[in-house]
Image (cartoon, rainbow, N blue to C red; front, side, top):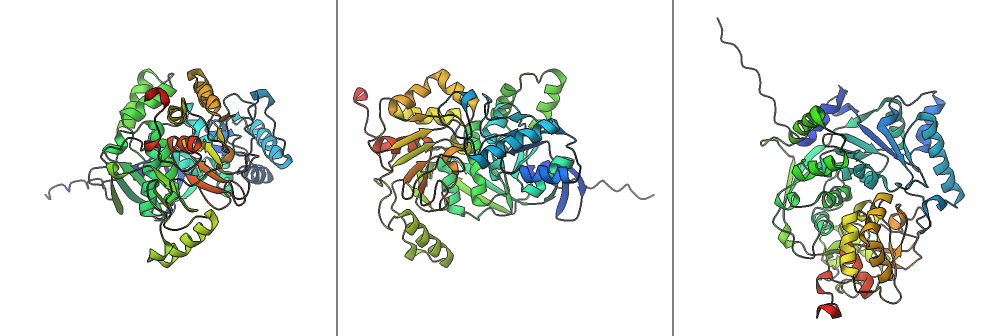
Length: 485
């Protein structure tokens, strides 16, 4: 009698593969699966055509409570009471009213224009406990990668895909490859998660993670707060990543439990056991790996028109002529023409006329605290207009409870209502041609904040330093306050 054949051991899997496998409804071919989506987030500008297509075919939304909508991109952020928030622009107002009508028709929860908890979808969803480890979360917005900070697979989709998800709660999904970015060491004083992720993008390039889901790990990542991890995962898409993940640890789990106090008893224990199992196998294979030393990262500022055109604040602007890659050289030359900057000149001291603190990258309470810490006892420089736009109504309320609003106002900032605001200028927060802005947002493309406007990406603390000096400045070298001398 032949001896029994041992069962084949399961192949080692990355965290990304585990999440995809656990949500695969059907395998379509060797590259595509039908993926179940735990949560679908919508905003006012990517959903109208999807709903129209749904209605033309007489379809409904079978799982309305697994869809959530937020008015975020086109809403003005003027500092008025919630009930007085009005979208004056006709086409934008129509987008918002269409979203409400569609949500009412299908029973989809909506954070509408005058809702006290309205905000940016990528800030609103985690703070209300909608995002939990192990989920698949999608949205018609590329920065859905944010949710990887909690061990959830988040990614952006197009309008046609939005329609498919509304009708089926599934998505035809093309598999990505695996990349691991390990960051060890300790971030120096004055350096933040925003600086870290900008430095990573600067090294691997704006297309360096194209086609990959990136798993971040290492002692420096472990040391980050959840809100700092949101920043890292949010910006991963600026390196071309199709997703970003950080394995959920005690820090992430504590954050989620704080947001969902109703999770108790046996359901809580089952959830905890599942969440703690969500990690890559020790021998899982990543197609590409990168390593970084956090101790080498200085505060970063972009000088061009792509997030990878970035340098330490104490560096000079690179010379395109020294770049060996023809495409990179051409891109840098065009970027310097647009930003009206010159190779070889220092970043420090470049005058700015505007400062913006906010966005789904850096509009959370920890971001506002970091900026306020710099601004206490200081004032915005003459000739600079400075704005702070909380990422949500909940963030705004928390900041006001801590007195941060007074810090900003006393320093000369405008304290505004939540929304995407000047991140992408789809509302009335738009910069004029030639205005240079120190911004905590995620993209510095040509015209991103207004036709001809110039955007320098940086951390909230660095933006605050720019506000009080009127220039691109090194937050580590601000003159001490009179009272501290």
